[in-house]
Every structure is written in C-alpha cells, then in structure tokens.
Image (tube, rainbow, N blue to C red; front, top):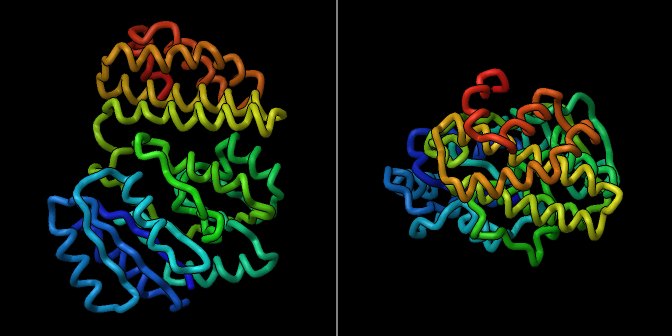
Length: 307
C-alpha cells in the first residue's frame, strides 16, 4: 500500500483536480489522507464529498495549526509501506505511483526522487547515503521538498516536524529522513505539477514566519558538524545562501523587522565566504550575500540587479 498525504488549507478552487489525480492512479492500492487545517473556504465540504465517492480517501479536520502540525497529524495516519506528500493545490500524473514503485523495486531504494519545478535532475542516478547527504546540502538535484520524494514509511518512525518552524520545516524533515537511508534513486521524469497558490506561506507577502527557516538550517549545520564534518563548509555555505534568499524576499516585500533581519545578517557575515569557497551558488548570489549582510538599506536599492 502507498499512503498519499495531503495537507489542506483554503484550496477549494484546486482540491478536486488534486484528488482526482490521486484516485485516478493506474496503481490502485492507495490510502489517501486529507487533513483540513481550519480552512475558511469550502475545502472541508469538498473533502467530505470526495470521501463519499472513494473509500480509499480518509478526511479529517482540525482548527488552524499550520502546515508543520498538519503534516505531523498526517504522519500519524500512515498505514502504507511507502509515502508520497502532495500539496492540495498541485496534482500528479496518472501513472506516478506505478512509475515510482517500479523504480523502487529495482534495488529496494529507500527514496526515489523525481523531477518537479525548482529541481534539476538531468539523468537517472543511484546514490549511497554519503552521496545523498552531499547532494542535499548542495540543494540542486536533491532539495528539501517533501513533494518530489517517494519514501519508505519506516523512515518516518519516531520523527516529528518542528511545529515552531513555519518555513523550511520540510527540509529539516527530509534531512532527518536521509540520516537513515542506504540507497536513493533519482529519475528525471516530471511527475508532479506545481501550482502557485498565493494562500500558501511560500507565496504570501513576506512575514516573520519565513525567518523560522533559520532554525532548520542551524540544526542541519549542527548535525553536519557532528556527523558529516567533511561537508561542514558546504552546509554552512548553504545556510548562508538560504538566509540570503530570505532577506532578498524580505526586501521585495518591504519587511523591516530589524531584530529578525540582524539575526540573518549575522549568519551571512559569518558563513558567506564559504559560498565562494564551495561554489555552492553563483557569483551574483555571493555578491548579493555580501551586500545584504552589511547593509540592508543598500541591498534595497540594488536588489533588482540580483533577482
């Protein structure tokens, strides 16, 4: 059985297409779990109607607690041998599960990663644990997204998402999962289709919750220093890159909380030189990191050259 886990928040406009892409899979032994996180639109009503039409669909509702808490509740519902997360405003190809299972069975892979927007997979490859740790820290071929990874459910045993983290919580969970893998495969086939929903935190006007990504990357760096010291420079370079991106988004939206900004600037000043050393990002990113870490106001005037 495959468990497909769907957190739902104000997705009434897109929910039916999402769920129909799940129930219409060529592989049929599915558990489809949807949890409504206190939606204020018609999402809950639509979910109930969909559950009546297919016995594989389980629906639950809770007061609004955020995506991290919702994903924790979804993890508690898993009955399948494998897990796929799907956001409620996105959809997948009709043969996605069949393709992923076939790939998984080739060599009993713990995770099969696949193509989606923002992920650059040029070829099919197989990786051992150390290789996938390095790829995660590079964050190009194997990123922190949960939605493009087909994962053995046993890897989630005992794991919880930090509910104090509102942005980047998925990267931290993926990081915890890959501490227990042996073999990972990636395929270049695009199976997942991503919709820009302005209700989601990643596309809302910038607010302080996005700064909580600091907590995720601080933990990832701490773990790397202890367990994978050969990749410490790479981890800290990625930390600086991620904080630079957050400050760039903050500038675009006119965010001016000085305390939060200074925390991120301190991190970039501390580790920004490693972006150049590890070549983890472009020269343009390196230059913007230096500017924004030293002068948020100067970066405001120059950011259009670095977008």
